Amino acid sequence: MREDDLKSTFEQLRAAPMPVRGLTADDIISSGEAVRKRRRTMAVVGSGVGTTAVVVAAVLALALKPGAPPTGPVDPAGPSSTTSVRTSVEVTPPAAPSSTPPVEPSSSKQVPPAPMTTAPTTTTPIESPNSTSSSREPMVSSTTNTGTTPIGSESVAVTR
Amino acid sequence: MTDPTWNAEFTRHFDLTADSMRFTAYLLCGNWHEAEDVVQAAFLKLYLAGPKLARRDGLTAYTRKIVVRTFIGERRRMRWRREKLTDSPPEMPSGGEHIEDRLVVWQAMSVLGARQRAVLVLRFWHDLSVEETASALGCTTGTVKSQSARGVATLRQRLGPQYADLWQEVSRRA
Image (tube, rainbow over all chains, first blue to last red; front, side, top):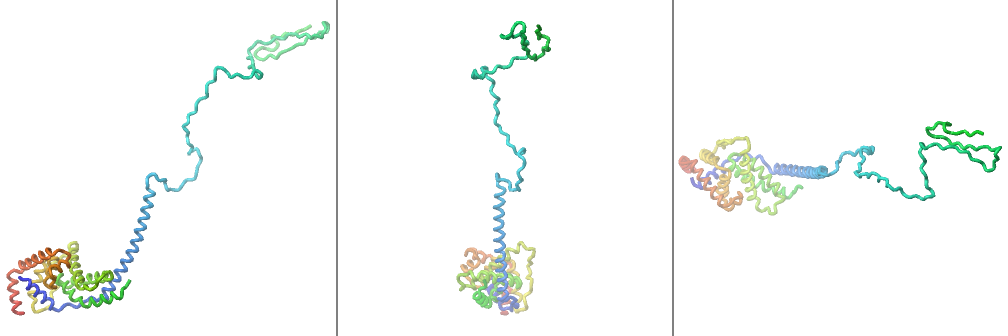
């Protein structure tokens, strides 16, 4: 078989009647317009969806970023007992009293009261310098006996 | 977005070249149904690409290139389809004087690959040079030469001596 034989076969095929053409230019143009419209719609929808996806992805990336504060609703402030902060400052104990008390002015020196267990004082008659011997009235000085000493047990009544 | 100038030019170009492109597609595909689909897809691509063309003086060659590449693309996608191709043509050609030799050659060409078929059609029907065929197919000139030689060799092997006898008879009747 030669190339010329193949060419002759093609020519014979071309000489045969062709089937009726079922395609017109208007059909192609209408199909092309539909394709353009569909591509335009897809481009608009695709760009919108893409933009939305980028925004959502950026928001999610910022929300899920480690260390970011939670984005949930904020609770109202409650009592401080649950939110009190415990300080770690150590409280030093008060200093021990010094062996030598501070010196105070002598004018305002106060003598601590004597303990109650001291011996009761005795009453002694006090003679008045203006009294005579006949009409001498002894002045009795009594002391209140506080403590465990019974009253009158040791007091001495002075009689004439 | 409708360009009335381009629509008129496309209509005129379609009326002039539609039959030629249909026959080219028929040689490539082997049946008229697939040829119609290829031609429709090719002209649709041409219509969509028309407003973007800088020069429109070579529309015929450009359309032929689209037809050939659309045919090769369709054959490539056929591998993934569920349709099964058969050796016999899907339709019988209408009655003619030399139906026998056309059938024999047609059946022999059906075993060729898409690129070999396209090379043979472009080289021996459209009388394109090796460079023009390579430009239309998007390959090198060496590929065109090798595909052409292998295609003719396959036809010779397929037809064998019986085709020579048939061809002599056809030539004598012609």
